[in-house]
Structure formats: structure tokens, C-alpha cells
Length: 115
Length: 239
Ligand code: SF4
Image (cartoon, rainbow over all chains, first blue to last red; front, side):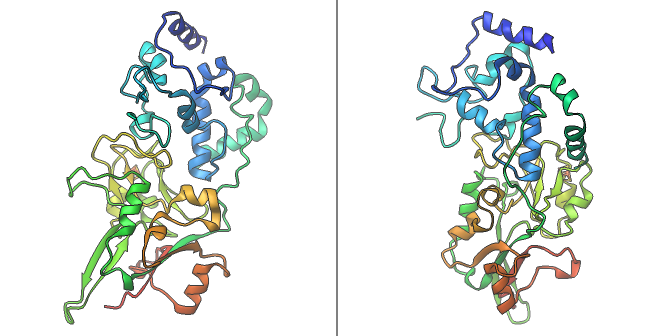
């Protein structure tokens, strides 16, 4: 685990593009917990949602995207193909592919990439 | 489902150990009601209005779930398709919309090698695309040809309806709406039908609109001879 944590911190140090979350919001968990465990949280939630139909849990990918994917300097929502997408700010650095978005929407709901 | 049961088990028995290993993971409680075994969701479709409509149900379904055409009719997904049938003797024709029939004994669930094709406790049949390997056994098994394989790279899916290349999909009975509104939910196709030919409701509840209408007027299942007991019932299937 600490292996990944140190990578994540280095990503910050490298001044990689790290988009700010939606203004006035606070993450559902502590930053360190999110960095090391976000996949466990999301996986747990996904079975609850899909198999049990319980959709108001706090660890949904949908809410991650709604808060963390914000407009870039061109006033656009960057999708997963963009280096400015929130998930890519770490995942490109650590060369870990995100497979979520071959099925899931990578920008906030009801928003378009271009306005 | 095994995996989930194991998780529940771990959650109940080893909470203290779990706290130190993965803080947050096992501690959250989800209070939403969720799928309930006492419900059996279904739809009743009166096909007598289907002949001359403009396929409003299909358009609405595909827009709700962001199912778009790639101008390749042989591989484009069709969550609902309108089928026209003809009686060879009398030449009488009729049309009916066919979607996933949400069988009580779904053949697609029987044949799926990974457990991706599953039935919720309230009877809704879905594909867990996280573990679907795209083998398409379920498509072969389904007597209603209700399932589709996604052949194209997709983007900008609707948040409520994740779907992607290499996996299989079908009508979800607008499960996201059901999870939100329960028996008061309306499916997208029901809402769109200009002739109010589609009714959604709880087949287990004797007092639901759908049960009352079934009691008063009766209905038929397609291929009832297969004994799969579909939750989609039809009226006006007379050829
Ligand atoms: S295509 Fe997916 S859902 Fe269908 S049988 Fe294969 S693994 Fe199961």
C-alpha cells in the first residue's frame, strides 16, 4: 500500500495537472484513505448498487465524477481521453489503466464535454 | 452472489479486523431500501395500439439509456424492437414491442459461465458488466432474442446506464427508476407511449394497477410453453 501512496504524493510533487474538485465540496473520505483505498470503496459500492439496488451509498463512482471532473481552462469538461481528466492526473503517472470508463460516463451527469 | 455473501459474512463477523486493514470500507452503512424479495416487477403491454405508432417507446428507451445507432443495423443495440408478425392463413398482421422479458427462470442466467447474467431478488434480470466476458452464450440462450452485444467503443454514456464494448446488455426495466420510486416508478417506454399501452407494476401486489388489470382482462406471455414465466405480459396477441 505504501508503495502506491508514495507514488501518489510524487505525482503532486511533479506538478502534474491536478484539477480542483467542485468548489465548496469536501471529499467523503480522508485524502490518504482515498489515495490508497478508492478502488476498494468503489468496488464495495458497485455490488450494493447493482445487485441489491441500494443507490444512495456515499462511495459511488458517479459522485466521484460529479465532484472531481471540473471544467478546464478551455471551459470544457475533459473526458477520460484527456490528460486533464482527474483520474488521469495520477493514473497516467503510475501507468495504471482505468477501465471504468469503457462503460461509465467520465464527465458529470447532464453535462457535455463542450458547452 | 457468492462473493457478496462472503462480504456480508466478513462484515458481520470480523468488523474489528476489517477496521485496521481497510478503514472506511466495511464501516459504511447503506440505508437505501433496495431490491425487495416481496416484489415482482412486471409490465403489461396492450399491443392493439402498436400497429400504427411511431415507435415512441423505442425512442424513449434508447434516449434514456443513451443507446445510439452507428448506422450499422446488423450490430446496433436494440433494447426494444418492434416485431411485426403475420398469420399466413388470414394475412392478418400485428405488431408488438419485444424487450427483455425478465423471466422467473431466465435461460441467460442458467448458461452464463461467470455469473454476470443475474436475477435480482425482485425479479429484474440484469448483466453485471464488470464480470461479463462477452461470450454471448446468453444471447444464444434467450428465446426472445432480447440481448445485445456492444460492438462499438462508446463514450458519454448516461450516468444511470453504464454500457460498453465487449459486453452484453438488454432492457433493465428502468431499474434505476424502480430503485428510486418503487411501485410509483414509470418505465421510460411506459411514459412515452402515446396510447398508454404499457403498464409497469408489481405482479405480487394484488392491489397494484397491473394486477387489477390482469385480473379483469387477462393477458398472455410469449412462448409461455417454455415455462420461463416472463414478467412481461401481452394483450391483443390474436392473430
Ligand atoms: S456474454 Fe456476459 S452475461 Fe452473457 S453469458 Fe457471457 S459472460 Fe454471461
